[in-house]
Length: 112
Length: 114
Image: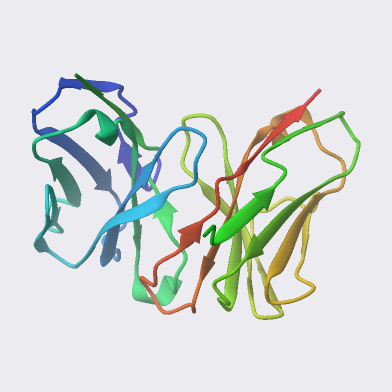
């Protein structure tokens, strides 16, 4: 079993819809949770970063962490065609330093 | 104003022929990482440098080596590429190793082994 599971998609939505992405994980030690966006033929770029449980909002993006369920989510409101990309979750914990454990990514396609 | 640059973007090599991938950074970061990302899979950390200190992941094959001659440059050497080494190789940097510190990724080098 992988430490971090993520549905590979593709997830296809019409422009303006809410995109809902999630990851489940097995290691209860994870404390720091990130979402990266990766466009085709580009490297990942950090979108959102949260520590422990709770919600964090940044513009059209909302990240949620539910440590009791070992489940994290990313919501994209008012989705745009430019949001079409692969979204990777990543996580780490104190003793791991800055070593990230990534999910396999979900490919998202926002259709105009 | 590219921050993490990888060359070449695409590399084709023959089975067993050594190949070197290059990464440079303009961020003056202390840490440089190499990841392997196979199609539709999670990036897998191979190793990282903190300044000149090299840290190899336990499951990184001996076939993979790295060099960091100075702060700006880091190289990934694959001594005898096999077909299973075909992947995207991502270089990343961070200021330090504090947990959760942002990692900045380059665009990657896609390696094909024939």
